Image (tube, rainbow, N blue to C red):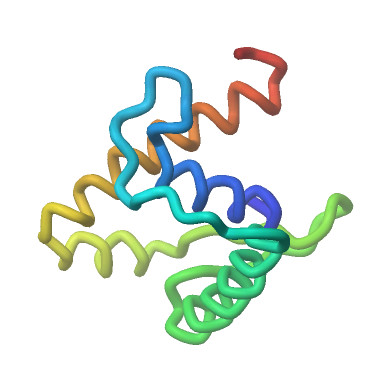
Length: 108
């Protein structure tokens, strides 16, 4: 995924109630004001740097730009977390990913 896709996925995961047939949002809706997604973009870019330094994410240059993905080490790291919140993030992440994929492929 590129950074723009990650920003949309981040929003969809935390505010899944906005999705068609989505579960309740994990975070309350806050008025972000102008530039809210731009602010999230900077935070996500900074987070990607941290994840790459830790060996949990990698970056690939393609003709379409830079794409980011999880490394094999990321699965072990995530499996070490057991709080309910992480489980909810996993479920909403899968749902948000399917929603984003469907939108990119012209499906509702």
